Length: 297
Ligand code: G4P
Image (cartoon, rainbow, N blue to C red; front, side, top):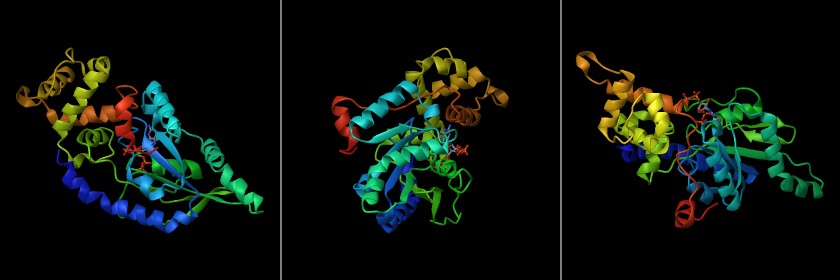
């Protein structure tokens, strides 16, 4: 995979924009809502965010929790809360805007009460941040109750950077802050590709698909057997692609295996949750805990 070179060229522009946005607006922001993907609660966060907003109140939403393993998700919530991070499981597609507004209001109650003591009825301002594809625009649209943010990252779309009222005393920045994902760790970068946070056109798809199938054979062997009709989940490397092609009957003329189709269908089916609710990272324990937190909550 050559993601380091290509991604480093692609993301810093966005990251610089978010940094500028945070710098410009930071004094007006009362709350940061950070989104990560519940299937990868470690790799789908950006470690630099802490440095940018260390003093700001923050809510962490483990979004797409409908696609993650429920037990592991609960373990992550316990882990984050132990570290002092206010974390919640969310499903931005199905959530009720009102409930989420309630969470935001609870998180900022202290700020509002302090202002009230001085005789001011404060309007809380919140900003949503996260790496690509974690559901930032979907969440913004749910909170507004209508479509204001573009779903998916489309270059060239003019963003307005407006504070918009979502309830009488709550305003949200209509532009989500796009962060750069972790790229210092190959395994993390690969997992971000599995879930579609890094675009497929910068990776070697057969290599990515083999890695995904190998990880799935380790973690959910029965789902792999059922979905891809293979009997031996102990296979590794290209032999695994061959077995899946044979199992699903993906053959070209001359009985060649159709690897293009195999890669595209395996990735699509995994991303669509057809292998079940899978979380690819567990909360760290012992020494790993120190390594993974980077000293942050
Ligand atoms: P972003 O702004 O952070 O980049 O993410 P965005 O809201 O554009 O959402 C990316 C995709 O994830 C969208 O799917 C969206 O519907 C889906 N999504 C967002 N939140 C959730 C969630 O909680 N659960 C599930 N299951 N899906 C969620 P899409 O329009 O099909 O785009 P794509 O996946 O084809 O890129």
